[in-house]
Image 1 (cartoon, rainbow, N blue to C red):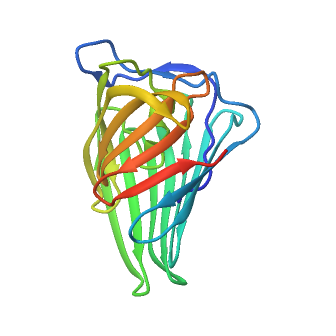
Image 2 (cartoon, one colour; image 1 turned 90 degrees about the vertical axis):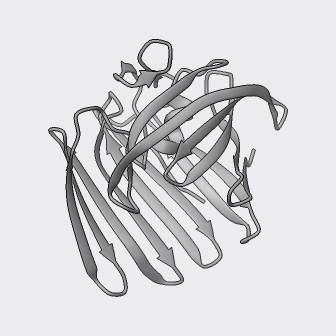
Length: 227
């Protein structure tokens, strides 16, 4: 499950690779000035849960918050980004039972990424500093890529993103694999491969670009928008 995310309105270009086409175009004009909160019900063999996200315009930055909640497990992610979708800072916390098992903080500045991870309950601290030449996609932005990017039949994108589990920069691949209906809404079917594996997003074609359904084959998880 996942919680809340805030983004800013603007159409921005990032020098990301669109395979065989022009650089990726991010469209955020549809984002409202008040939080748009979307709540999902998630089902898997490990149990059911909730996933909630929110998005809004906020001054000169984009703020993101995501929560995943299931029995005995909670994951909370937040992020702050510039108008051009470049990350400024992010946090990620994983709770198992009543204990924080991992608390990660990332700070981006001048092509340098500083990462601090605290492992609980042992209070072990791991720090890393990475340098990068190209714009990155932070882990707090991943659930929103399919809503921001221009998608059409056959489109494919390649990004670089951070894997907060290993503090390494890794590929993130996105491609439109088809079209169809989810909850009677006309959607694009978008496959996204990141550090957590493959996810299939059903994204409505209308202006709001809501994610209607997410399928994660490896974990046998289905996440569906509550309307």
